[in-house]
Image (tube, rainbow, N blue to C red):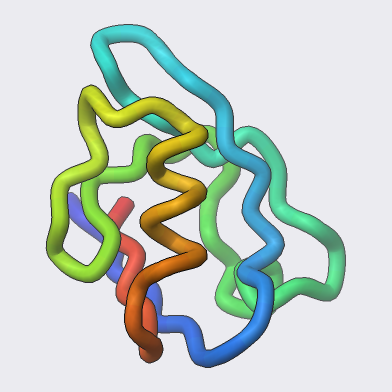
Amino acid sequence: MQLVYEFGEGPLGLVLQDAMDGHVLVAKIAVGSAAALQQGPVGSLLQAINQHPTRYRGKAAVGQMIANSARPLRVTL
């Protein structure tokens, strides 16, 4: 089951980590952040940012996708 979260302007509060098989996962969520307010699950694999797949991109590239994407930002886990 995929979960989709929508974020407005500002930092999300996600700490990303490279995972096996080309995935990027949510390693931590900052307390009081936009992601914490939406109760996103730690350990989830990122599937897409604004419907653009994140697999095989690595955490640095996914971080750039998040920084450069139009808002509202849709994160699919």
